[in-house]
Image 1 (cartoon, each protein chain N blue to C red):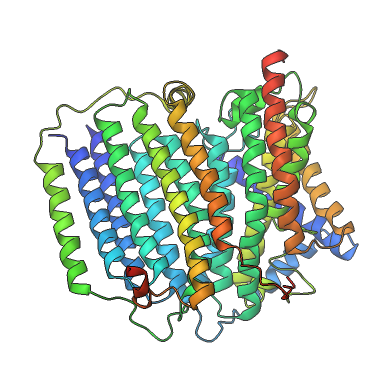
Image 2: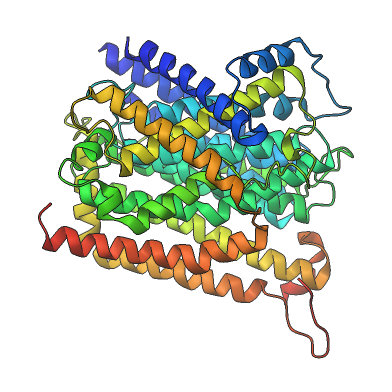
Length: 177
Length: 299
Length: 103
């Protein structure tokens, strides 16, 4: 029982941290702070995975998001008019509509999650090492096709993103870089 | 108990690194110099720049130190002498090291200074060059050990160390480790000589002391990772296991700290080109070779 | 009634709401992508919670999480590429100024 209480506490703690950092993302004016707040939100979600005994996924989430959000911070600084947030610019529109949409989404999601009877909780969780092994067997066995198509999707998007982002060559102009 | 022993080892290792680095930079071996300069840093005034991002400015060095300690937590010094033997230890090491980048970006952005910011973003570019070269060699190591646990990885090398089993992976991982700990010739984020200290430029006093300490912990953690993954960890004849780990780690740190200084600093664009055009194909070839060898030969 | 599952799902609902608000209210493309990341993160939380409390023996739940992480990475890559192309041609990635894309 004590394990369950501790699990509940940490689940709620990291979850609330994730939501709080998620709110900070859209409230702060400094863009680097915004990107790193999203990083800490994702890290808190990774910690929630660890609490839910999905060790591999938790560590993977924590690892992947560090890179992703750092790159995001760089792009924020590149593309925003006021990356340092010194001017306290308002960068939002249709606030009321967004708030309403968010509220409706929250209520709907809460209703869906609270109303049905989910049945009894599972008790036997495989150990972390066994989970990793089972996941590998799943990925390279039954779900191999889906996994491979995910890999192919990444490859396609890498090529497409590079092609879209590359500077169009103008004739007669040489770029020195 | 394990934690105390490992932290003591860590402290001694850090002091050793400071001495070796002093030798590599100034050409003199002085046993007291690191302690004296640390004392000097603590005595100095800790300046605060005008309009900093105070949160990042303070949190950067501390996050760097925490990251180094977390990375040390999964490195075994002897059978059982490890802080946490996670089932996903190798991946955890990776995850901890990814936050070196976050800490450096925070330290670079925080002080509101040009050199510092360039240093921080430069490390992001450097990270993109070396990140895959950390992950892919570890994948090959885990393939041979059939486990992500660091202790199992060490015991899997009982017959043959991984440095002989997958030499390509070893070379790539050492280079990537040097890039991660921004050791010369890959010291782009602080780049003494052309960036005025880079992200360290605005740090003084106690904060600078924490930053330097954290960097040494990271160097030691990288040496520990190299020893664990490629040089057989605690395995070795005659001497006790923990002594072997420490000897190997000290040799690796000395080699990393001294040899790089003989090479001129690599330019960012060249590093990226080499990392992606040469390093990643080699790392993939390494994974393929290790897979074939693991299937065919039984060692 | 599984309390842990309900808590995890409520957290997911909260993250979804915050992400939806962000994606709708922000004017900058990069900020909109942050909102979408939060929505996908909410999906991740729900997937792991369902795996943990309902079907821990079925690894397809964890596989689904990996696929969603892939989707996040792909979304980032393509989104940034579009941002770069847009910034190069128009000098800004503000969505208010992109009305000509409406057709």
